[in-house]
Length: 599
Image 1 (cartoon, one colour):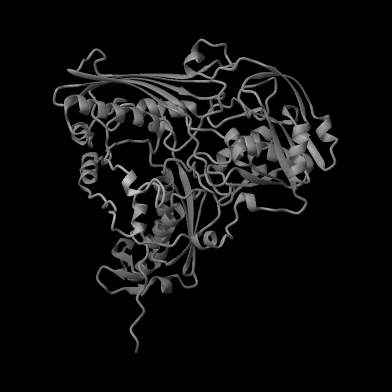
Image 2: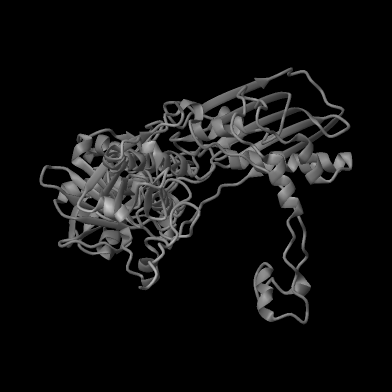
């Protein structure tokens, strides 16, 4: 007899091919920009050419009269809430009396051809009275308010230890972090389809579909159950995807026309419509003793939130909380402000707030090292935090924090060899720019730098982190249902590995995401690895118990005495030994679980 086939390794610790890898390679994976529907209309959005202006009148008649135009809408056509926002709902669906940033949405058109829609938008006449814009965050404190809620969005003062403490060595610095845009490979796109119940379905690359659904429903004046968001493939995401300034006109026009409507933004419109990383100005003063141990950190942080508040309060909280970095600081005096300006809105971009302060405090550590005559990595090693240390927020680091070990490992890791004149030209790819570019070995100088940073993961300012997942097993095939959006961080691979590890099944599928599933929260900061991964694990373990209970009862033992490994179920004493496939034959098992790690 031939030897029994050995099960392929699977589960955590093994490498799985990406579930959508083949479709991506073949170009068959459907993104929102690829979608089509019978009777499709195209949407174009009219955006303000001024950063600040008062609107006198909007004449849509020339656009509405154009052949092929099916609808033109403005602020007057919004049936529900006139404003939206994830944290603060102060951003208008369409500008009404005033525009507050260049590119703000003023009107939208649905037409039977994208060129017709663009021509119709250009035909809309808007009477603008141009106003003086506030473009400098420092002047926003004294400037005339650009919003009824004022220019100051939030101020956070942080005091820790003795504010009068002084170190023997002091270094100062002023740092400016400019506006940044992640510019994902695919710009915003979406398809909206009206439903028979008076609602609408939106197909788009949302990274937080339930939050988007709730905001859209509020602006449409509909209950959430009449709005469904179906997540398509995500063409890159380093923060929020599919800004609602694109999705809301889409949904409104689908309901107005009773037809499917589609939008596909170009790169310029994408830059105008979605939120960017907060431009930040940072003033720092670091105090240390002669041995290089930090005594006090003083910081003033000013963030430009742009025209609307949205999530700026969250970004400021992160900046202030991590203003001293991953270092032990006995005393801290930090003030943070975020203000409104007439610049484009700032919002969630991965590591919001924490990234800007990292550039500043690490610049300070290099300055301090130079003044003390220490190697920059040695100065950092003398100050890094560890488990049990206190943060300037007063919180204790209770989790593993092997910062010193990480720094040591990076310092000791060998650098790749620099290509020499006799090496294969392909080795020039090791250098910036590549062959025939800046990577010419004769034109490149190599240097080594070390830097540390930290970013929040869960429960910022008491946020309730929760995710729900369902695991279903039918025979030898398992399916995971979880509204955690795959943005390239590898969640679908992790979910498959977890189920393989817990249940011993090889074939695991992760279902597409939509808002008919329970919420899983935003795809931010890698939180799905912990929160949604935890929900998948709990659900899989509940199915595991359902699978093992009948076997355990037959042999008069508890399920804890049975193990699943390499596709086999074995008892502690070896009396029971069967395959997972045999145990699952003819069965359909499922369980739903929540993970709420911050409680």
